[in-house]
Image (tube, rainbow, N blue to C red):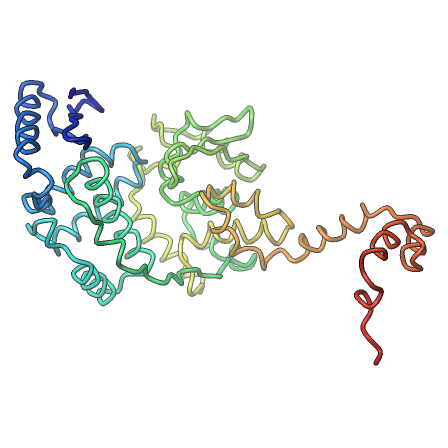
Length: 373
């Protein structure tokens, strides 16, 4: 029997009658931890520890608070904001209910209400992912529960992909109907493919003019990535650097030097879009246009995936149908590398080649040619 600290919290490891119990004592105070450990040991001796209905004395708000305090700080800022938004809706629905009372049926009901509220399948799945993660932590690390009710609830079928990109004519029209600050943002995004928050959070210390790159640290998947800058993107940054009148570390900042509010950006974008007569197109479509144009130019999916910062290349597969020419290049390369001589080809066809002979010893000719009878 011993106690140890993990992430600043005391844990107990107790063996009784051949069974090992390792659990968090949920406190950083050694004296209190000793008292809790003593209680656990007593329950083990009395034989009531494993019969306790764990989870009955834990409420849903306690789960969310502990999740946001202990797990959320480990993820990116954007993921933390997503967790915070999801937790508000989850708390509103589940209220003060104890964890043991939360059933798959109840979770399914929550999904129905969110669907009726007009949420996209991907948004609902993100909320379910957070809920499932919280329950898994409650099971594996906090020992509050034994079963994750979310695991018995099916995911929403996602069909959120919009195959809508900006044509060259639409781009010209959109830029003509945008104010200067918005024009810079649109053009920069068309040549870098940044997510909206990545673009608005870009600071000058992440710009390397010498290497012609920008470093994106706060990404959706939590992994920093370096984006190379072409001449258009570099010209925009150099132009902004020359006319800086306000000392701001943010590249695309407001008039007073602060970060541009995303709602103000979207509002300005909608106005420019309507003036241009462009329909069915969102700000996120600029990023999609960037990727689509790369695919049209023959850039392979792996490079597109890296530039977009996709965690899984499967996400990038949606652009595969945009690059048939690059796929043809692939099989053409295979043909070019197939350096059989004319004699070798004839030998293979006539059956004089060694490979055909070796196969002929094992497989009847009928196995290669269709029967004529």
